[in-house]
Image (cartoon, rainbow, N blue to C red; front, side):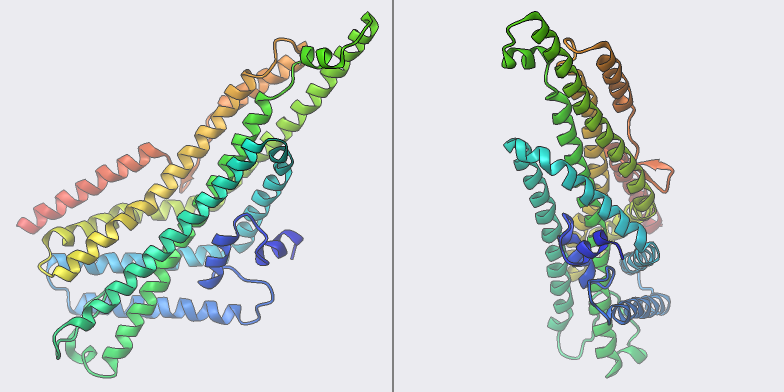
Length: 406
């Protein structure tokens, strides 16, 4: 185990809130935990059992189209979370390496944040904002699920309902099968809904931290000191001293530029690595998110069960938020990466040497080349993709309306 992985598990990473939530869900091994694998196996077993029981219930008690779509939405949540869990567990070294590289870049640029109070405040605000959003969505999901789990208990005596997926009364309505299946639905849906949301929030936080690193780098490029300013501050008295100070100024600015270029290369490499790690999960969430939104929107409109309608309208913002986290985060990261070009152009290059100006030209050209975060290595993730998914969702919804009317 590397030192960086040890720090991650001890909670010393900039992504520690996200890592702690994934630890609680059995997906990220904490330091010194001998029972972690058994806990992870138990969580996955609950998910598989819940998926099997929900599939049987949907097959044996299909109900109307509104009930079918609601049941399918529940199945999609569990299936997506199980797949995300398998991806994270099977590719755990990649996730450790991703967090390690984010931490290393944040530590390297922390020196420059210490010299500029605005950059330090920007870094702290970005981290706090990602943490607040992660915790808010986590607790919102948990509160909503707890509320939905209690609703069937308020039904009239003798009427046995389940919180997330209705099952045939024979034999599931008998005790103790009813109590066991009820608990299985509550625990399974809670765990895997949180897994769905917290893995998405993990990538949202990574993109937010990488965006801040691009913002800090842009500030470093923009603040490259002009040679004349250095000469004026040193106040040389002779021509020889002026010439010496100019050469020294060129060397200092060139060293600053070289350090900025090295950081830029590391950031570009980090974005490419992030795309490798995130691409499969993003593809799954974007594809399933569009379908699942339609599956939840239809019963919210046509279901005759008031409790089901309330559940659907409570779930719709969460499903849309999961898709928006990827699209908005990727768009912001690409915008900050392109801003490096403008920052490099706005530095004091007119007074610099020809060598420095050629180097800056290469930096500007490279920074203008847009970065690409993709879903499944096929589709770009940005705000335009989010709008396209909304249009696709409405098309699916219209198709279900047409099917239901006939």
